[in-house]
Length: 377
Length: 137
Image (cartoon, rainbow over all chains, first blue to last red; front, side, top):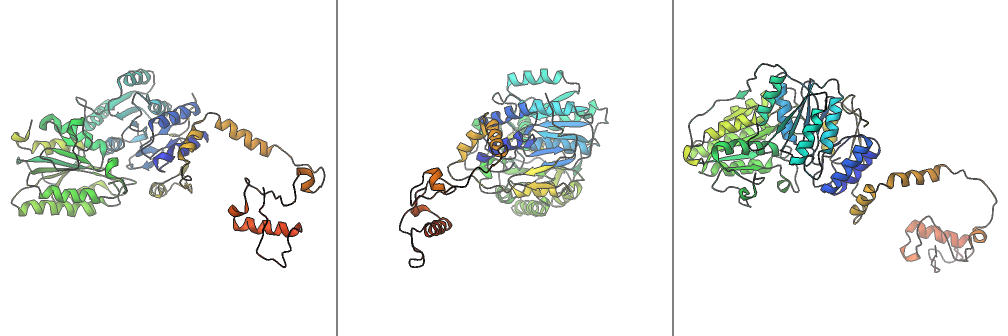
């Protein structure tokens, strides 16, 4: 269901009444409608994925934005779309497949919704003989919901690992590494493409993201060394940027945020706004390092590097002609099986001058390490 | 607790909304049924949500459909409608709520004119395309 948010509830209830599992891609669905929908689904024994669910994979079929991954033992329950894509893509590159990825919507583990869909998704994966281990990807739940979830997970036959993105929590790459260790897989070496620069630059880190969770993760990782990061989706309200998107500070912007997508498609489909901002950021002499994400897979642009690689090349040329260096670091989320193969995309970005990582957390650490000591707090 | 077989067999997909999402499913060689979705009539969105959330709805729908499906028509007699329903001269019933001439659609006006001529209320051969007596439903 991807109709406008105010009509999504009616369509989704129709599906639930017909005994169908339903994925609600629409956002802007009132939380009380989400609760009513999930209670009805609970009674009917079906799963509601969403609202605002961008990613799912069932029986090998990608729904919404999803990467083409090999089948395998890991089931994913995700309250976060691009977080789920990072986890399934890294698992795939480590040779470990995914049995299913079930989105539950970003609010599912809030106190209001109480994890209704997360529990139903866990029941489904627990009953699935192909699933040997389940990973739950989410922001930290409301405390009472977290306690209920842990008790519920402990009663299942299938082991459940929680990958909860928040201050002091492991990043998504670390969560994937823990899964791989549990499955007795060798320690992976995550891919990089291009040449690393190591020279430190005096100025600000500017992150331009299409994935909301990737932006969140990057802010959490960068804040460990750089201090507070300003954003349009800030980790705390005092860090919000206003209309001025280029303050004298470390900034990370999520171009997939609702306010940025009014009247236009998601930046994973329409890159215009981010490309414009990349040009502006390159002209600003206070920019020290640019950090980007690229999300591949079904539903995304058919060749993101076609637009982004020339834009990266131009950004670097802009800075060079002004006598500055401009390191561009990119996280490229995808697999070799995606409609836009990961290696081809990453190599185009690297050829344009970017240093490209398969891991968003690793890309962020590298970018943050390039910032000079006087810009750290 | 019953469980759907979502993760155990190839899904059959029904898509309502953005075509690009249905296209991405078709591109994975899975057939998808596209709903010809239209926005609701202006001012009815919230009412529809209230009806959709009402736990009585499923039972009410089942009873309404059953009431239609479970009856069997039986011919009892043939009589003029005016005698059975107590219609006065100039009254016409149509399949809808009460309506006057001013709000009647073109086809409905045509039907009313035909009916008025058939009932002998007007002489359609002398006064084409006019009907002075408004219909009462």
